[in-house]
Length: 430
Image 1 (tube, rainbow, N blue to C red):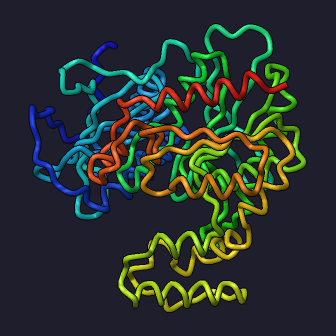
Image 2 (image 1 turned 135 degrees about the vertical axis):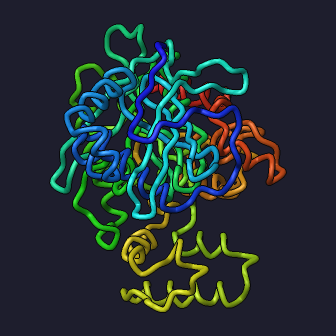
């Protein structure tokens, strides 16, 4: 790809090495806002993020032209991964739809962008890397709903002919985007993106999409207004749209982790040909989170019990210990309340289409017992255990450090056995 430079008022050269440091919170806040405006083609909103001296050196019209050129060449901005910080300048690897670039950005004391540079990204070998796949054609997908718009990516096999099956990939818990990443936690395995590419290579289309309040989704919904049912509604809407699309012969729902429960509930009574649960959770929400908190101090577990006891009575609980804020703050409790009422083992009994349960043996978050419980709920489901597959669907040992390292290794493929199991199941459906 032709060398691309986009420079605002402060011009800095890309160093050969840079100091490693934790990503400052203000940089991520500014960057998330930048990504949102960029993907909405709102160059003027980005212009307003610049410091006064930058605006002076780069007028609004020039700013529009430069971002227009960047969007034409590189496409949608999918992810920004923090690499390091030196002298107030943060370096990121930024993954666009058509290219992978390096970005350097500085933020002044007022939270304004004081300098910005894009250049070709070079990995450890010194060669530029791209995000394109030779077997896949990707196009943006947008579906308007009463509560906003669902935005995602349709991945089609380049050599597709006639009607082909399509798989809807539903993301896991937390701030997981359409590609299977959690930029907020610096976790970027690209699991769903890689799965989509692998399916396309096998003649299967897929749709992966951002959850509400995540990525590019446009919605007036605030965190306090989010309910588990909203995720179900979005999946049902996508099922309806794809089942009417003449390009597709079958619609299959694939839910990962928490997405398994969303998927099974969305499947009930809908025009779906099959359901796939990957690392599916089989406990009610409060019981699952209680299990995950084992090993924490008593005051933490007791504090969480007070919260869940209150939620079962239909009331939120405001006195949240700081250690529990990330998972049970008051603004997220209405969501937890609606999630807790669903028992996956009971709900999967209502699924009337062929069902596949896939479980990895080195998953540190969802173990084999979960798949066994789901199997009890639906005895005719097929179970595939994949040796050495972890939570992000990649080859990983059981040792924690090495396992977690794969959460930020997008260059690792998803397990071939996963691709084979999904492909065989989908193609066998009638």
